[in-house]
Length: 171
Image 1 (cartoon, one colour):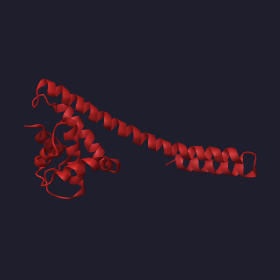
Image 2: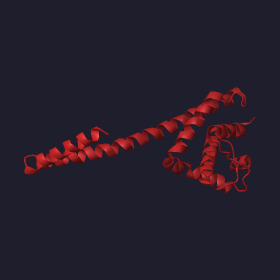
Image 3: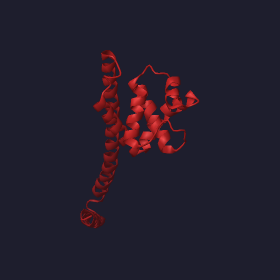
């Protein structure tokens, strides 16, 4: 079994979707883009034509389009990101020693680590973005309190914030 078929079978086992299926259904299109992305990461020497042929497409431009748009798909689809994590994990468990020479096996390991690194960086960016939003709200409230300190509205704002906190802490 070559790496193309191995990767397709892992994707099918993890998602239940056949990336060789001829359809424009969003889930299949995005998983096919994931397949091309992982395939390119695992075997940088693979051509667009070989990738096209591995899933039975008629045009290599579809491969180029999928590779170009994968980051956007992943950015807006948490499910796709989760699939990628599971597929990379499954790839790590199975290894590629059966398919490649020792030198190529080391190269594959490096590629898998590179993919994992990209996934972790993406997760870190999402976490940073979540905290950034939360801290912006806290900063605005702190600025409001600082600017209203010593005014009659200060205690009103404090009372409202405490009520809001008490109400939401019980949820």
